[in-house]
Length: 396
Image (tube, one colour):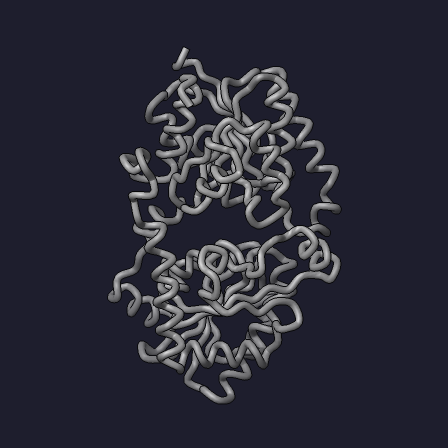
């Protein structure tokens, strides 16, 4: 039976597609004849998953406006996935992040008697905590990427949450730059080795760029008036790096655009101004002191504040309060950004305190004791594969 296992996948966003692909690779190493079908993107296709729903065109949206505008696509994707579960009858459904969509799929799988593994566990500790009742009802096993999550779930009556480590921990080891390589990259970009360098990460979506890029650029320009020796590096994903955008930033001197190299840019830089999101945790691993910014439309702000139980929003602040400074909504101005960038670049005591706080965050993710019996596996992907294997064998 093991060699004929059928596994359905549901990954709705790029990061989930990447994480899921690592897990599929590990599971195939154990059981090479497993068959995978479901929703995903290029990374899952590359490891042999039959993506009957292409998440890159049918699912990946962010923000309430985008969701409303793409409702028909999302509903069609959900219908196609339900049809897959009902007709293909997989032995296991693995959900990866993409929480609202995947909760609906978990409920349907439960009605069919299909066990459910949820990887990148729903952040009920931050957003609509009442959803934990859905976890208890419909999810057989949670694979958590934050070390505090299993205890949170356990205290609320759910005992099947397992910390598997964050996927970025293993990934970063392969992308860590030596000092020699950093110097080489600075030379290639024509950035003096001793020049203060500010990383600007406005986001990877068009709406994020519209909200964050202008205040970042204006803040950098204001900073340069006082510190003309300062350079900035702006990593952009390929679909954002357009001729129009490059023309927009061309008047700024000493601003360097790099494509698809955000991790490298954060390792090169001395400080950063970063939109909230995964990049905040990545910056901690890159030893980059930063200030977080975030702006959203008024409607989104009202809805989010109605449901979110957090007082701070950066991932590193969720783990430990006040690790970094946050600029939210109306506080995202060129003047405040310039002031924060100046402190991070030129106030050594301020910068050092931020670095120390970020290193404490990193230590939580690199401490193997919190992994328990899963510590025997090298990566998050291998640990999730072990949980999936246990469910398939009926041992989880």
